[in-house]
Length: 351
Ligand SMILES: Nc1ncnc2c1ncn2[C@@H]1O[C@H](COP(=O)(O)OP(=O)(O)O)[C@@H](O)[C@H]1O
Ligand SMILES: N[C@@H](CCOP(=O)(O)O)C(=O)O
Figure (cartoon, rainbow, N blue to C red):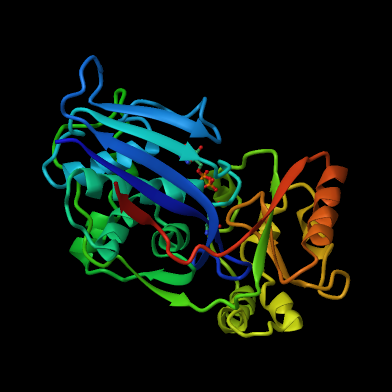
């Protein structure tokens, strides 16, 4: 019997200033998979047929063991003794999330892949258990937690017992083996331990919107993490902890207190180091304030960048145009969008 379903996953903005690797906000750009499983389909070579549409479509892989979404689904299936997609699985991936911009495209792809594996294999995994699979692949919890659970979330990775810790810290190449010449032994991959992470959803004041100013170049999360120090001084860590403690509640209050939020979104842990990769970053972050641009609440780098996220209640055009103009002076063109929180997170819709 044929089956059809849709998987829908929001993009996300991680960190929101001081919450490096800790907080994430799911936002209203949605990765969508349209899936049809048709056992009677004939004339199709592979048993999983992928069509990419949207951002980066021309460059994204169309083979199931190469594309991040379907590789992730295969990981989930193999952990349940299912070695491949059922014949014939047609997956149309429509991706409006810009790649490598700090809006969680890879986090959304991983969440979509885990949801796909769960649905294709009819595994009945809960969202909490699916999070364990996500965290075996994307090892900072902020994006995947926001994309899966929705809204504004805080998360941490638990200190697991030594056996589980060893299973969790297995090299990524063993979780998602490279297709060509990799170490795909055909053996069952390592199953995730239970409860790798914990999370909590914060509130969100309904009048707060997120303006994403998106430069027209890609910066991979891996390169943007490579410029960060391995150790930090107590002063900078305390600076961030103090602000994060205030920020998560400040963003729930109506009407929002712009002065409080603006200060609480300052960061000393990642943004200062990333300025070497994002032309004009320091000046851009200082270019709009609640005084210069009423309606602005706070401004930060979105995820690993280069997108800038400005939280605001109104005056969106003026705030965005100021930042677009600053980037232009650095020779960088941008697009911008006003986004809403995506409260529901990842969704599975049976057709
Ligand atoms: N829809 C998708 N399908 C396949 N791969 C994807 C998809 N979205 C993202 N990716 C992979 O994730 C990479 C971007 O990840 P990353 O560097 O973490 O940036 P981002 O900030 O967008 O998450 C892409 O270059 C691509 O390899
Ligand atoms: N906390 C991570 C978040 C990366 O987010 P992405 O959207 O850039 O993938 C970091 O800051 O490195």
